[in-house]
Image (cartoon, rainbow over all chains, first blue to last red; front, side):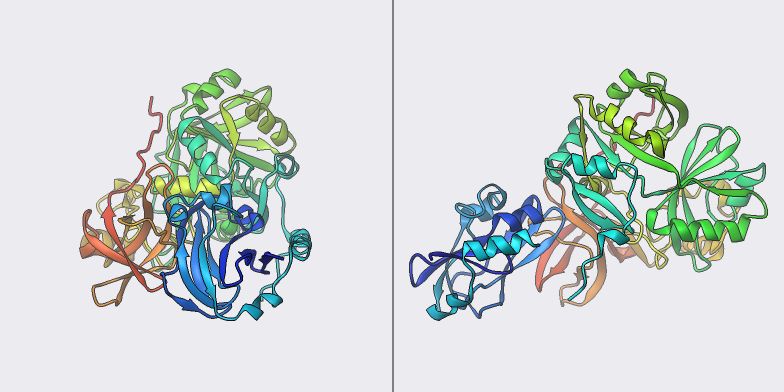
Length: 124
Length: 376
């Protein structure tokens, strides 16, 4: 299962076993409203699972972006930094936030698949 | 973990079903289940208000009448504002004061033929009513109006819409009010608002509120707008939000609201003083306050929000941000903050601490977006 989800409404695409892409879900952007700013992590920064790696701000609120798994940031989405509304219009594709080199590939086992995540959203 | 507020515990306005029908996102606000935005979203609603017209439901706010010949003089014992000099049909901004010169609430007062009509903040309405009953209830009749809704039609096209629905209201000037029928519904409307734009605030009986809202929303210029856009609009307009930019710990002098204190209520004036905290206010009027509310414009795009500290070059806190957002119309980060009076000079460079990062900001005149009121 390449794309996995967290209870913090983030997705992580693990189709490449060592290089994962992270973003926020459609549900997350819908709850935030119009995204006007993203604070992306520094390239090369290493985080533990659950660390705050960035911030996504809408006109009404700021929300922390948590690390779904431990790893090192190897790329950030400059297009998203320039146009934060990508997080609203295409959150689960071109509105990705950053790419990670995973520290421990077994950590993804704790994440949810789409069916389990959809169940959480439905009951939110 | 905080428990989610039970929707059952929240109050609703007469437009609650309409908000749901329009697809609003509802949030708890001042004890009410209120629309924060509709499907268009806060940015689109904000822009619609600057370019066309929007309709807000602000029925959560408190409406009251003060009845009796002595009502104006009685109210003057609670506010530093000229109420007795208010002509019939005219409206004025006022502040309920405490003994230390702090602000208990801000309100709008309109003199109608035989009474004063007051609009107060939702979160303060119970306390305001009780305070007036206790302090001036023996001099005038304090009459809450819990069965009236309040709608705000705001934007440059508001008058165009009103000219179609109630031509007599379209000629009102800023800060005046009149009774009229809109689409056959009896209302009391004032030419005022909380967005910096031209517009109307319309008081209507609960039972007529939905029909009135539907009549206005049926006009092509009008989009529904929620509390989210109301907040970004009022902040760009430099208008204070009670409980955030002003409260019991800030005085009207510190808050740069001295324009609300007419000459007649200042030292040397015919009815100087005579309100709670007058000695504090008079001293500050003479000598200036230590801190002052200012506008700040961010030089970078990272939003600076309420609660952020203003810091000096060593990182020590010298002030605090009370409101902040990315201003959709002005296109930059805008905020209001209290800073030492010596730094409250337009152009001064300051820094806000946001999650440990110093964000450069410049003191700016208010409003950020020019007021476009209709003064006739």
